Image (cartoon, rainbow, N blue to C red; front, side, top):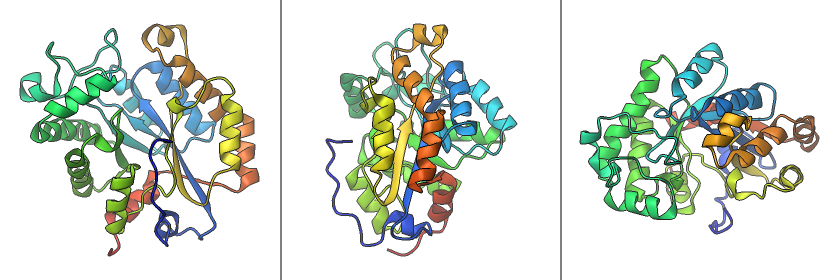
Length: 295
């Protein structure tokens, strides 16, 4: 995002570690929040199957996670990661940890619920969360996917950039190594550490679609594709149908609906082809993370 200043990229870009030439423009278009509710689930599948999205990230604790997992079972060709979740977005559409609450008390607010990801809520969570309890909950979410017979490609975080704390990111990288997965890492300190280990991460500033203005978004997306730099870039997009039910429970539905409209538009696909942009998913990065090169 704009407030994060990136240091000069290493002489070899992550895209080159993945086998692309130095002048290649490589893009991951990942649909976050899969499993939050069914209007999101349907839009995510459409955005991958009919649009330019390349993958998605599953929120395992959410009310529509089972629906999302059933969709993935029916579509094994859709790559997906696990959107590790320690917060609940709204007070009126709740979910909790997969782990019994008495085992992860440091992850809960004074009412015994997951924190709402306001700036204050995130700060309080990160101040009190015990790393051992974070690990218990992260393992529960990863194991629930494995127990469902599904094979994710990567781990990323819901509303906590790079996990929100260095030790949480370090834990997640260790879990990824154990389970044979990659990790989305996009803040500068984490990127630097991963590249020192020979691991590919995004070369360019990360885009979260919630940072874009709703008005004129399609034009802005088109401009971003035309201006996409060489190397590996990632967009975290958030499509939803924006149905009446979704509007009642999701204050961000306009962001999500406008994402969906662009991702599934003929213009988006035509621009990718016109600009010669290679769209990949995390399976390519997963292979590199499973066999890291020497620093």
